[in-house]
Length: 205
Image 1 (cartoon, helix red, strand yellow):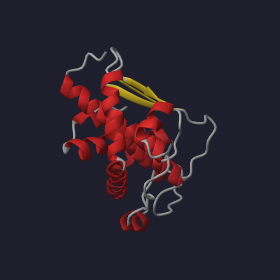
Image 2 (spheres, helix red, strand yellow):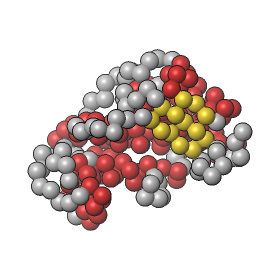
Image 3 (tube, helix red, strand yellow):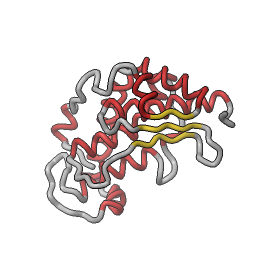
Image 4 (cartoon, helix red, strand yellow):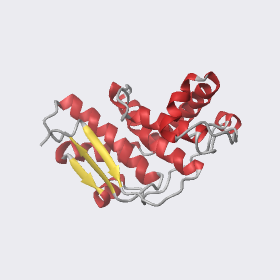
């Protein structure tokens, strides 16, 4: 049973359902777990199992950024408004998405423009946002990623709603139940195709 007020619980369930759907549709994992309203655990959280030994390609890293933006996109699509829940702390969705893109651009040599310059360790990459060129590339990339994952959520809106509705009652869902509620398998309804801006401006992680 959740301790959250009804409107907060509803929005949180939609937000976390967005993360869960993105994780499944993008193929990040089938072992996804969602919890909302647990005392001492914040409003909600979505987790998935991922190999501890993994070298990310640019696209794989961008999928992680899409996943982190999917909660905000679900609020946007389903409720027509966005809360502050995606931002704020250094552990927030927006902070994580920004860190991923900044690391691609400034540390891993996987930026959109093919720049091979190493500016520093991944954990210091976000500090380079003070440089106008890097800030512009990151902002453009994050906008493009958000538009893409918003489209993914629109395509799977019924699945998001089914997951959110059950989550409001049960407050915890995992792998098989999430896949069944999504109801359309774990493959994208349409391929994620980078926009022209994303291709030409070649962003980063």
